[in-house]
Amino acid sequence: MTKILLVEDDKNIAITISYYLQQEGFTINTAKTVKEGIEKIKNNEYDLMLLDINLPDGTGYALYQEMKNIQEIPTIFLTALDEEKDIVKGFDLGADDYITKPFHAGELLSRIKNVLRHNIKNAKKELEKINWLIKTVLNIAKLDSKTLILAKNNENAYNLCLEVKNNFKAMCEINHANIEIVSNKEETINCDKKWTIEAMNNIVKNAIEHGAKNITIKIEENTIYTKIIIRDNGEGIDKEDLGHIFDRFYKAKNSKESSLGIGLAFCKSIIRNQDGDIRVKSSKKEKDTWTEFTIKLYN
Image (cartoon, rainbow, N blue to C red; front, side):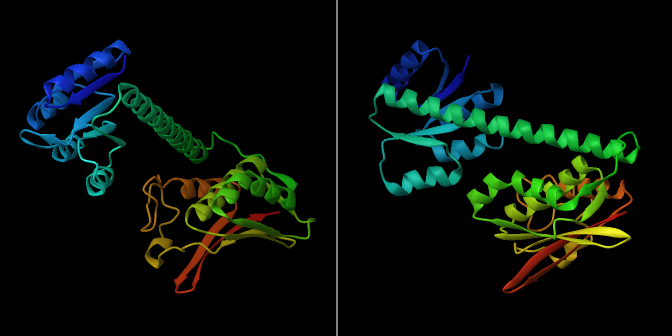
C-alpha cells in the first residue's frame, strides 16, 4: 500500500486530505511542524510527501532540504501562495509538483498518481542501468578469465557498420544527429560480429550523448588488418583524460552524471580479446572539437 507523509499545520485541511486519501486506499501519516516531519522521515519510509510551505517552526523548503539528507521522497508542495518565485523555488530544490490552496480533492489525487507513475518509470530506468552494469562487469570478468570465448569470422565490414547505424535510428532522430558510413561495401573484417557491434555501439552512444551531430564510420582494409575509424564532432575529451579513458570506472571531466565509467573499458576488453587494438585521440580546440576512435582487427 502506498504510504504518504502529509506535513500540514492546518488541522481541518490535514483531516480532510487524510480522510479522502485513505478512502482512495493510501496510508497517511501526518505531521504539523518541520521538527515532527523530520522525525517521521527518520523513522519511516514513504512513497510520497505532501508538504505545506508555511509551517509554525520554519518552511517546507527547509524540511525538504533536510529530507534529502535522510531519504529521497517524491514531493508535492502545498501552497497558499501562487507567486511564481515560490513555485520556481520549489522546483529548483527538486520538488516533483505543487498545488495551490484551495484545491479540489480530485486534482490532488490526479497529481499524486502522476508523480507516483513518473517515479516508477525512473525506478525502472535505474534498475535497467544496474542490470546493464552487472552484465557488463560479468562479461568483462569472463573476457579476462577467458571463459567467454569470442568466435572470429570473416564478416562484411559495411554490413556490420550498417547494423550499428540502424541501432541508433531513434536516438539520432531525437538528437538531430547523423551517422555516415565511408566504405566501398566490399571490405571484410575478421571479428566476432556480435561483440564487435557491442563495442561500436558503446562508442557511438557516447558520441551522441556528448553532443555529436555528425558521426563518421570509416572502413580501411589492407592485407594485414582492417581498421574501423569512428569520428564525431562532439564536445571532445580533455587531454588529461585521454590516457585513462579505457580505465574501468574512470569518469572524465565531461562525463554525464549518469555515466558508470565502464562502457569504454568493456570496448577495450572486447577488441583486445580478439587480438586487436583500440586507440583514441581528441581535440577540444575552439571551433575544432572532435573525437576519433580507431579499432584495428587483424586478418
